[in-house]
Image (cartoon, rainbow, N blue to C red; front, side, top):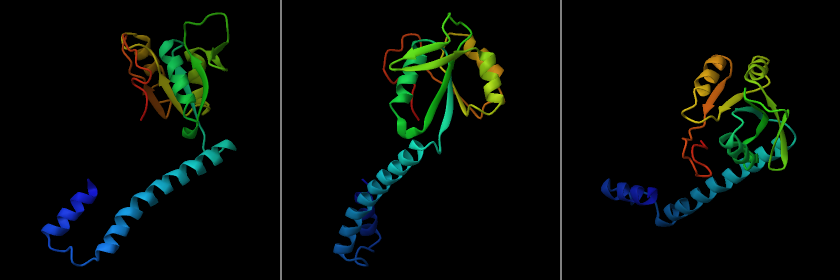
Length: 169
């Protein structure tokens, strides 16, 4: 689409004769290839740096439920993102202090423990993975207000069945 637009703009402004067809063709071919190569290079460099513990961000998940479990799986499938899950936090705890999701164990803590870790600077972002109808979502946001650098809400309603609904970006 961009190529077509630029060619039409050059035709309308009668500036297409300034550049040779060969130069324009080479530019239209090499520019996307260079951008793709740079993207792979940056992603490889980030993966390399993050493998050795640099440029990592720690995240916490509020909500020991199906939405939180799916979010853990989604974040775990993106190692290039550099996100390290520090734990799952919920005030409705069972007897276990660990939650097993897939092949990994994650610490299970209370909202008060989460606030302490955020205040200490151990957690960079908080994902609130509670159903939309749950008033604990609002309570968690009020408790963390002004504490975490980023609070993100995972929007997934009661009937949410899609594997990635509400996740991303």
